[in-house]
Length: 334
Image (cartoon, rainbow, N blue to C red):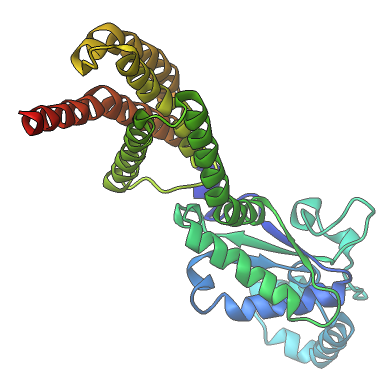
């Protein structure tokens, strides 16, 4: 981060890999035209191609330099001050001029432009602006999408976009596509397991309702805290389904086994054990709250919130609901 702040750009660029130098230069020109306009103007710090380190059209430029040297006759040079003559000699040289090649450029400037096989010029280096902008999913998707659109706009096989930003964008797209499906499958699996365990008795509906309320509380807490779903923390939902339902199942099973159907007795005998079980899990997840990595921290936060929500619904809301139902039945019978 210190190096990025010092240089004003990311140290590691996102790379567009073309099949030949001509295609890479064409893509670079497209991107350089776009990075002056929104949205790339706020996302891209600089774009580098081979022409940025190895000047193009060198024979024509050398011819112009030779013509200028020929026009600088001794009489004209005498009219220049010593400092002006030194500047002219430094810029135009005193001997025969030759074209600069990639081998003449220092390795520092060629970093990312020279490949392992020694070929040069087939890559376009895109340096994003430092900051938190590209941590946001929409901006990240827009950035990578614009690069891929530019890579596909040049004739030939579309160039490939590589780098951490492209990988993160693809993972986020996969989460959007598969995350909801995985969560639904996990929830249905939990429902099937509860149905098999409780054999479809009336407590089944109460248990599933308790789990749904806990998940809704978790979603509400996320919205209140401004936590965004990403590829690291979305897995907290399927985990909450599997672990959180246990507390309601244990409470409902004890209530079913109690011949008196006293939910108060179920809380007294089972509530403490259920709470202790949940607390050990919460302590384990809470260790992630000490992580400096934001992805691990947010995963731990959601896991802890899910535990607290499901535990609260299992030992507070569900018993209160069952007690209320029992009271309604007693009043109806009398």
